Length: 366
Image (cartoon, rainbow, N blue to C red):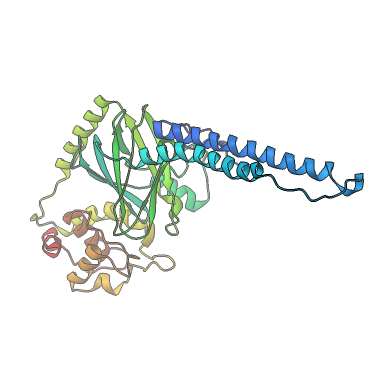
């Protein structure tokens, strides 16, 4: 049954046939280039096919036209060599100018590393105001449940809503450094005119400068696995004052969350903490019931999970497994890793009463 939705400002429009409205100079230039190239191609199409059909109809044998051999003048040869060359140059010059501008990531006001992983984005603010802030951005769980159940509720931001959007100030040059933990992803926001591959083991970069505030949406633009469609991008562009307030709020929250890795936790407290970590980072693949799906291994009853040798499961979470099929989770804190491992060891049919303390994870990192 069709659902009634409206255009999403900063995101896709209903029955959209053109590019997203641009909010950066680069995106505006890309739009201009698109129509400029389209106009040139349309003119060439009309001229070439016009001459071709005129010649076919005017000089066909059925109207008495007789073929003849003509000496080909040199000016014709020069014409069909020089004119296409000039057209190609006329198209290449503005395109090259835009391409060079796209690659100029120098003198950025803010640098953010975007790490693609199945199936979420990790954002680390590594230079500029907000340096030190880092978080994961995942599809809002209500949208995942809606999609998995097939019971859709009309919503303009379907599969685009995230729990933690990237926040940037308006009018500032933002450099995005991309990489990936597992497979190739791509960071793309159409309104910014930006698309950059995120490749495991490599670092790429791009940039944008948003000219107006608002919420802007994109998606991973490289097929990256079964939940590729569950990997949206949400960038919130705010005023300088709002950004400063957001930075202060984030740092305050980070300080409040900071855990002492030497703290000794009780089993029940660590399991409770691990439940939320599991829901945010693990349930997408291993399922909420720990049964896994398809090639994704079950955690419920897993020999690795219930093994008394804690070092085995710690090693898997820190270093990954099966060539990235199970990604490394070093970006989580020692406490978060200890909590989620303790949770899996004491949930579903796994009743081991085993506990992994943050200090054990910290020691394994070294």
